[in-house]
Length: 282
Image (cartoon, rainbow, N blue to C red; front, side, top):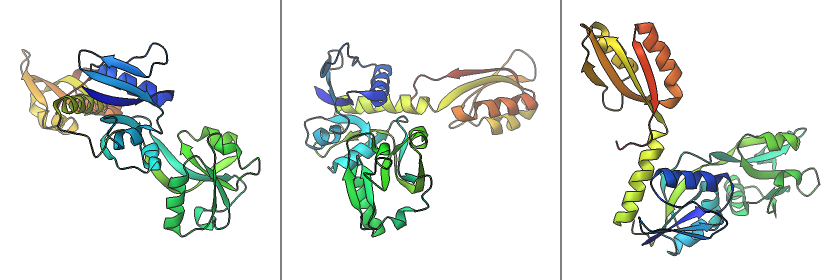
């Protein structure tokens, strides 16, 4: 029996549950349960505040857990980033009012509002800046307008909330964050049930980055087609009943799908089909 922690609310929770479900685990809640037992796989899924997951994992109460890099770093506990999960991507940045020309290197003596005081403290130390950190639990972006702070440090995804609050990002991101699978010093990462979980999740994460492209191509310029779709190791090539033609199958980056199809069409490929990949093991 192992225990896996999942975020108890927000999009991070929704995406984590979806990922685990696609990996063949039963972890869906029907209300606000704190525990969901997957009898088939002998796993207890524990739903915790995302900010607390790293603490439980580091102390060995939970074997592995899903949380954000920003939250795990802010917890200031020993943990390992086992696997990047490809969702929940954001940047932790400084922001000031649109009329303000100051950069983070000009923050000496200013008040900085944030929900992540440790991350800000460490960054200010690195910059050798003396500033007051104003800890808030939420709605950090309004603190400048209300006169509580001169600048903020907060998680930014689209940046729309900052714009609506009359703020702009300044300086480089303090941290690039995303959802992670983490373990602690007490985790037996080679335990069969944990190894199986990691392989399943890794297969889905990789599969989400790729699609499968299949098409028919003239054999005499096959090398040109293979240059467009080299695949992971090499494309799969099968003979066709039509003389001088072959069928080609290869994985390509999902973000490159349309460009690849354009290039294949220009080369004379026929019957181009693109399908999503649910999971894979490379």
